[in-house]
Amino acid sequence: MSVFDKNYQARKDETIAKIVKHQSIEEFRKYWEEGKNLTLEEVCQLVING
Image 1 (tube, rainbow, N blue to C red):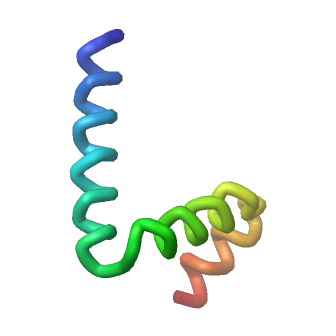
Image 2 (tube, one colour):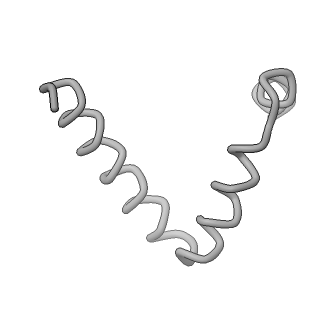
């Protein structure tokens, strides 16, 4: 594992911990799965439209 991978994983873990403070882990997993299935076009529309 490279230093980049370690830093990325640590930052990812910190971000998930912050998100879970505001919603349940079940809600997080639900939205995570939904997000993984979005197309690039759908993601761009979400960013543009808020």
